[in-house]
Image (cartoon, rainbow, N blue to C red; front, side):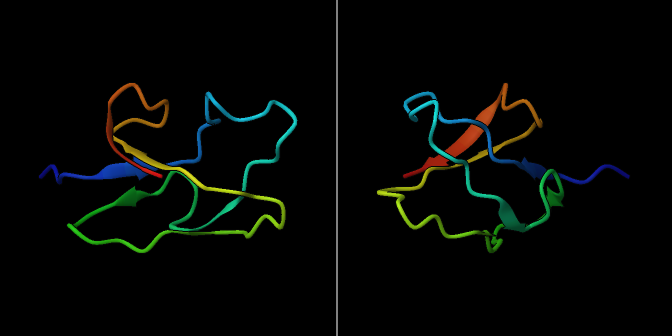
Length: 70
């Protein structure tokens, strides 16, 4: 039986400075499927970050982004 799930992964942001670090995801584990309508996402804090962007897609390569949150 197939279930509806999304994959969470931190892709490089296109507008991000090439030298800027990408925060490591803490939860859910990088690439883990997320089932349901609610999930808690967390990542390591970057002291010099001015903003974060979270993207949720149906594939690890984010060919089909279903949500972007700034």
